[in-house]
Image 1 (spheres, rainbow, N blue to C red):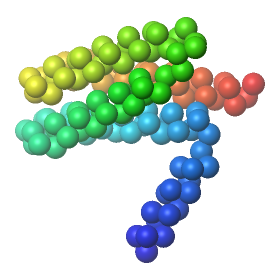
Image 2: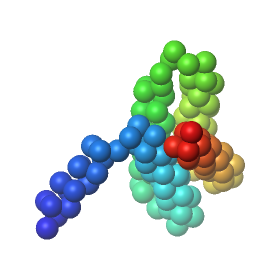
Image 3: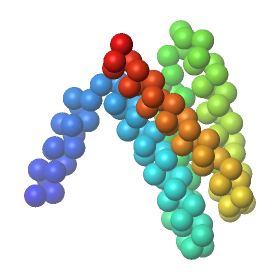
Length: 123
């Protein structure tokens, strides 16, 4: 059963548009930032650090795949650098205040991409 589910997931991902894949990555980013907050509240530091590390991996991937021919890519690159810097501070300091400051920014970024994808789909 699990093998069939894995094949289904792989097929679903392979048929997604670039916009859908991007939104999937942002959804994963938000999921892990929320998980980081919950695990930090419980003082489950290994799970907290794993969630922050996953956030960093996703942001680095997003940064690595930017299409540099568009001017907005430079702005996104700077934003991704900022988030990586801040998330490293959050991880090493177990800083809940900073985490709660960054989380809505990441959620807003995801929502902006979702809005843009919807607009593109209607255009």
